[in-house]
Image (tube, rainbow, N blue to C red; front, side, top):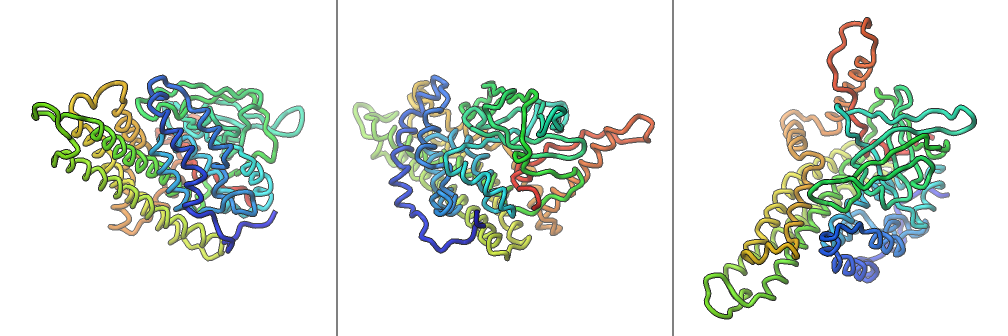
Length: 445
């Protein structure tokens, strides 16, 4: 299989993408409230997207995809988020895995996984755990009676695993952290629908259990020691982009629902008899504000996507520098600070157009706030805000700060594991769960 390059082949246009996926998004949107009310997991929606090749849109044309850019992908995701924000989060780990393969330096890695992606395989991730401290308790060990490996343990917050064909999981082999791709139909894999968050209820972000799960050598994506420096990448920003894209989609859904609600109403509070709320200047003002909030959120997404695209193109051209990755991280962190407030404002302002009738349970307009608040709780914005301040005040780029924490966590993990007579080890919390973005890269050739 040939390397991925900056292709000069005409990529799929936005108009062609809309023609291909727009009707699917419309069908997803038409059923979104019913799914929310009945808590029906969107298996059918995922299958329709899979059949249409949605999971392969980033692959170059010559590899079976549509060759679209990161900004094009995010415009699609915003539209999908308007239809149902659950779907964007479900596919987040999938597209991160795809992106990791696109920039992989390993030809064998691409040869193994790109055809599967082109054929419709969907990937998810199992990284975090419900433990007393942030640590990785899932283990991978050599098979005693033959070739290959076995994986044991339990993960939580496993977004998308209910819908996927493969799970990218993090595991420990002694002091080595291992990223491994596990087939969801492998013996010993159990996926549990126990996510109980008040928002993003249909993402399948619950438990995944691995019990003596067989894994072949080729399924190991990356191995690195706890002391190993984190590789420079734009995947951190890429991951954050998905939350920003889902939030922007919610802002568009708020504008859509507010407009439809007002246009259907025939009375206004405080006005006797029949009236037309759409002609009310106060209602017009609210809807105008909602349109501006949606525009701002989408603009933020596009700015971060453009930065990621620049890093991607520089990586393929062999001209990438740390500055490319720093730019992507900083813009993603800045966008996160602002987009969250914009969208949460919109989800509350929505109710100013409708009075008490807007709170009717069958409308589920509150789902927009619940979903946005849940998305905003991922990758806490306050930590990113501090990282931005450290950058502007002290010149410490976010990637450097994370690398320092990673190294310290490795030291604490070893101290915690040391026997009691090994010295006065600090009361460490243990090594943090490996960042998912660090696990998307292939092993060194």
